[in-house]
Image (tube, rainbow, N blue to C red; front, side, top):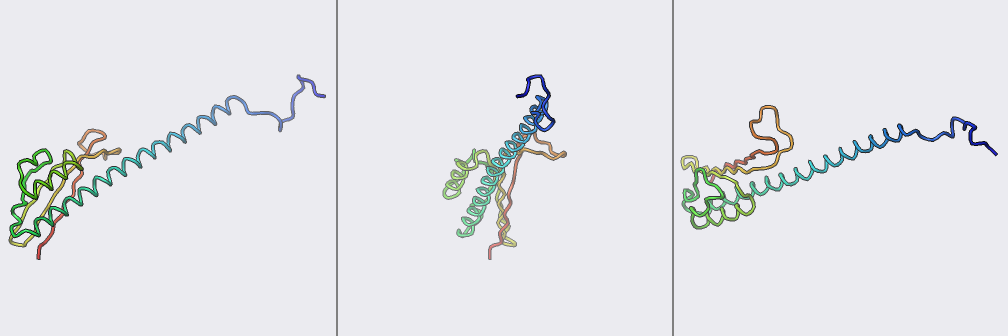
Amino acid sequence: MKRRNERLPEKQRGFSLIEVLVAVLVLGVGLLGAAALQLLSLQNISNAELRTQATLFAQELTELARTTSTPTDFVQSGGSTASCASLSGQFQTWCDAMSQTLPDATFESSWDGAVSEFTVQVLWPERIMFLDATSTTSAGEGVSDYTLVTRFQ
């Protein structure tokens, strides 16, 4: 039988408190990294959804202009989802639908009859986790845009 005061062999010694604290610290840093990665992933999914919606709305407005005999009915300079009431007909319906999906979005559309080109630009706010050094926007906020140029035949 071993006495209590007798030293154990080197292989049978347990972890010291410092080793346990270091292990917990390393594990904590790893878990924080995984949580940050998850947050970034969710933010990118949300931004991708907004980008897809903006693309679909630009294509829809282009189709509305293409199917009418007067594409100039769908020309708007400096339009926004806040001013849908100033539009009429299908253009107002399109704007109202966009205001539900992309609130605070702005748009511009133009028609160049000389080359039969209809251009739609949609701008919408989105959350940005990392800004580049040349950005002038405040942290976490940015504006994305999508431009669609279609030539009618």
